[in-house]
Image 1 (tube, rainbow, N blue to C red):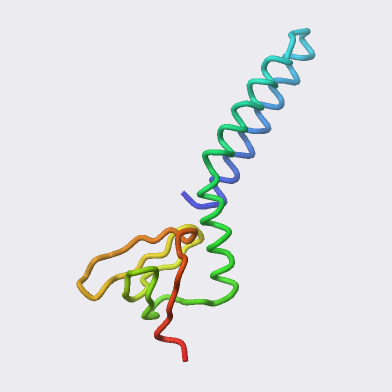
Image 2: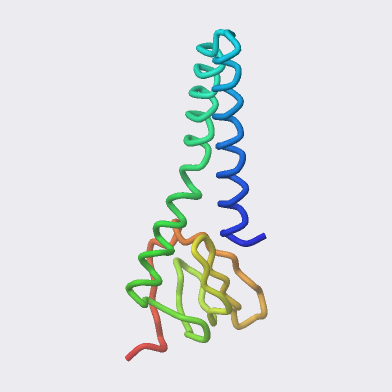
Length: 117
């Protein structure tokens, strides 16, 4: 599933929910409890998604600042290896012993790039 299809599905669901609430309101039903419940649900989802948003924002800055790229030999936190992929949320690094490390971009506190001059 790509980011575009996830965004499209989310928007379709949001539009459907808003349309349903508006229809119920036009039919004379009290929609205040539905809206209050949706607000609480939205708050819970936003609190749960904090780390995902943090990882994605960190990933965006890493890509814009060109800190490292695929094929670079880097040291992340205490792990060392070659970058295999760089995503918005996760960077994968293959260590010299063959271990594939999945590092969330928001957890990268210290980075050394041996491939850049």
